[in-house]
Image (cartoon, rainbow, N blue to C red; front, side, top):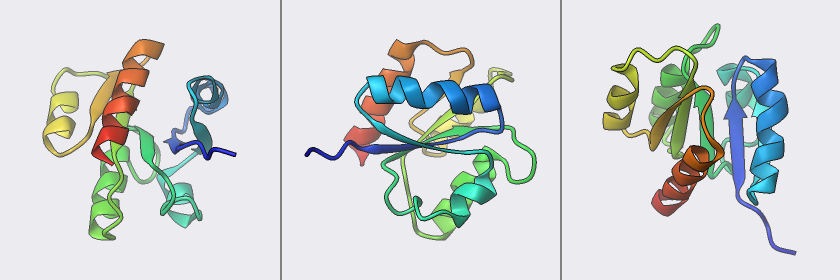
Length: 123
């Protein structure tokens, strides 16, 4: 049995948490979803996540806050940020800070797959 790389999805939007795992499975990845950054940090998936798909704006800890916390904990993981609130400046700034990509919802399957391939090249 071949283990599929784990992609963890952290998003407060239930529709994203319901639809993205199906797409990730179709693309050949294992998927785990979390409704908050805090839930992800409290899980046993932090050390085994190969890539994190992370919403920028969430109640409580934001996506960028979680990214900084993972660095502080010395648990770096490639991150693909997703957002429904694109202002044009946030995405490039997050990429400069080390994110693989920042995709504007709704994003295409192709854009997501390209970002995931880039993430797993880095990992």
